[in-house]
Length: 263
View 1 (cartoon, rainbow, N blue to C red):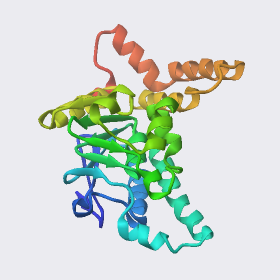
View 2 (cartoon, helix red, strand yellow):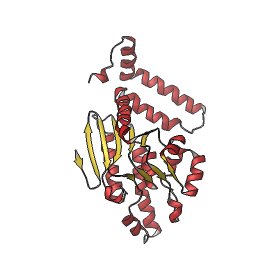
View 3 (cartoon, helix red, strand yellow):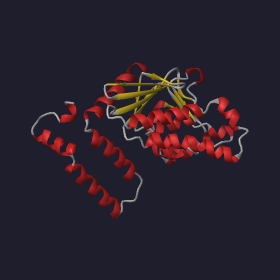
């Protein structure tokens, strides 16, 4: 286990767990947290012994968005300083979204403002039924700009029109209804649900999981054009010819476990 200023990182049984560990400030992030998250996802994304990554948090809140002390500093920034600062948050969101390993958000508490971006960049999200969600930026005279590409993908443009503009708080059931989270469970069932997803992820072909994640990025919301169809044809041809692709088909036909489950 590794403990940094803001995070606890542990790897066990092919699963890495990154835990936001600033419960005293409701796991709000600042430039230090952003840098540590970026380093953690970049490093774990390249490790062969990691097949999936869980983003979790300590305390009653998952993430309350920007740290108040950080916001106080930003209030005096010039536009150039704001550009540089916002670029750091945009970069960590990109790093997390493009992480080659599948990612699961374990949401044990409330999610506000920029915290919505942390959940949205994960491939899957499991929430406790008591969690509340809010895109509160307009109440402060701000907009959820850097998180918007990911949050709009996760909740859809129609829901974004409402919740970006009104800054209404909504519950986990509504987050599930709009597709922002995949599962809503009681607190005592949270780990079991997350573990079920992790079992599925670590049982599948590592190469296929990585390729499937990239496939969604390449295909989602793109025009179904000749070039896109050509790319999907090449994608299935390439993976069929790959070592794991051949092994997966052969193990299925021979009614045995594939070798990635025996390693």
